[in-house]
Image (tube, rainbow, N blue to C red):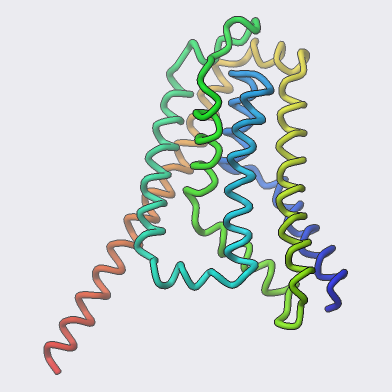
Length: 227
């Protein structure tokens, strides 16, 4: 596959993932609705940085880190899942956060809070790097030049940024916010449940991986002792 073809196919496959709702989408949308476009964009920047980190790991062959420091990534899953679970509960129960009839009733936090929210949401799922690897394994070969890989990485970052800007712009429209203000209680609880389910899955995966790794380590130690 020639470099130009690799770039086009890789970015096309990545853009298709935008239409598969996940924790990142719900968090950016919820932040925009509850705190305005600026806060939503800041949260989106955190997600974009997470995408940049994980796509870079997958693109430049650093996925071996996951094999060498597998337990660390499992712990990241657990901690990230706990954070998402905390946020899910706050969305589900916090009436002030969902009172959006006017601009003055928006929740207000320092920008770093929103940025951290987006970054943790993205980094809490280290399997994202494996997802990128699955795409790269079909579109990139050992002969793919470095410049093409850099273009792909930059394209992923830019596409991710543009998508978050579109989300924030759309959900900050007066008509959208007015509609949301009429159904915010139901939507807030729905978003809280979805994020809670995603967070629970992350925690379960992280704990399961640690248990399996510890069990394998014990088996290996027992075999070495018996020998």
